Length: 329
Ligand code: CP
Ligand code: NVA
Image (cartoon, rainbow, N blue to C red; front, top):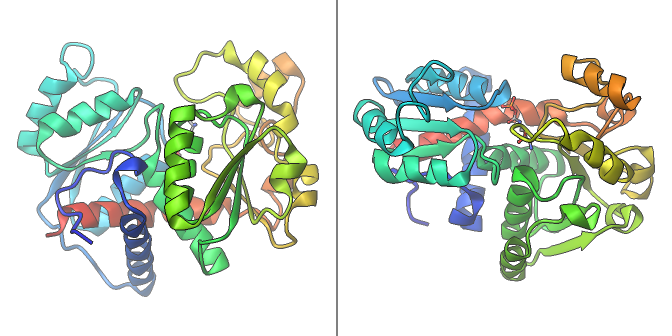
């Protein structure tokens, strides 16, 4: 395998199964070192920029803590910068590339993060775009491997909105690593044919498989992992909720879905999750639609099957591995 030094981390399509596995293994090693109190501040003196055009808890905190553990300083850029208002991404990239050793970007179109990488000349890490969420993939695979001891051959079921960043990235990652990936949704929300075609090619090579179905019973039978994400993503219009609730409520992760799954099946979610609607946005939805939980029931979210907080912790260890691999010669 070629070194990942100086490479960008923009989407899962850019990496081989071997490279993805390498990042999972490196995350595991750095996690073990941190737990033992072994320092790994090998990037002392380096500086990174964190651009967030959308909100974040896990991704931002992971980049900041991981950078600190590696010895680097961070500069957070959100509202208040010139980006996208007075200054283009191309110009921003050329400015930040002169000052920083690496740049994280969370925002809208995939082409923005691709341009940032093209013009900055330093490693760029995609902290989430509409099309993909690649850093989340390393954390998710690490979490699954920790739990089951392996990845190949596991039945991974994604329920809900399967045409956005999370499902796109999970389908490609599972296909490259030899998991059996099933997207279960109303077919309006299936991933694009073009991406499914690519995923099928990867699965053929890895020994995995890709299935799309509208049947919860078919999808969840013998599942090892049932995964979901919010039904309306950041940047999508508020008005989308009505139609999404109507179309996706049959694909809620609940006791019925798990009744078909293996006895030791687990629940995963990238978070944040609408599992009890006790938040500000949740209360609004509850008032409008009379529901008390959306993509996952509170019962499943709070059950012993749920490994969502291991998954959240692993965001930090895996983002550290991604920065380490691309910045350490
Ligand atoms: N999963 C995830 O990306 O979380 P944040 O939006 O809090 O960063
Ligand atoms: N699909 C979600 C993922 C959040 C981590 C979003 O884009 O808002």
